[in-house]
Image 1 (tube, one colour):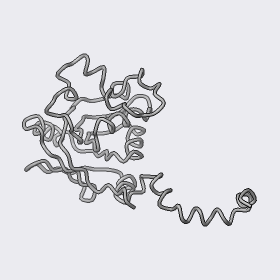
Image 2 (image 1 turned 120 degrees about the horizontal axis):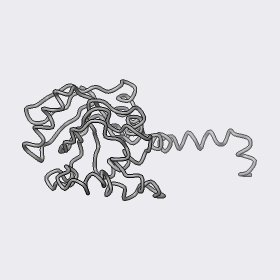
Image 3 (image 1 turned 120 degrees about the vertical axis):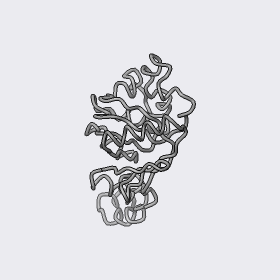
Image 4 (image 1 turned 180 degrees about the vertical axis):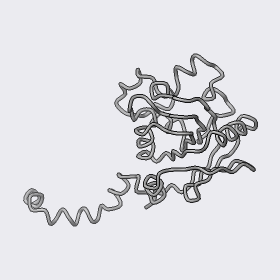
Length: 198
């Protein structure tokens, strides 16, 4: 499978707040879009307007791909737009103390690695990112570790989600396309499909 995600390597962005809900990640007025294209421009739009010092406004964190967050990240309504906006902003992994269940599932189905760590470790990681941006973080799903410079911490992820990412099985479209020969072969055995091809 070509879409295996065994690790994520990129600079970090800290957002150590608890109970960040999906309405804050992507405001409701952006849910009317026909496609998810361009949603990344509006990640945390209202928070960024209210707080010019918001990390997503800071040039030193531009291009970051590993978000370091607090407890219950992605709570609230179950909109897929929230992880879509983060992914399209550039986020490839989120390390948090905990996730809302539906948000976590949406992340996994998009190939965004959502792992958990202890609060103490997250505080240390966020402090390191703030002290020396841009700080590179490697999230390894095989060893379940996150490293940044001399700092190394253990992360956790449910085994089924980890296996799906590491094996590439999270990518349902990729699985379908990689099986195109088998699908075409199977179609020839389905009577009601063959009736229309004659």
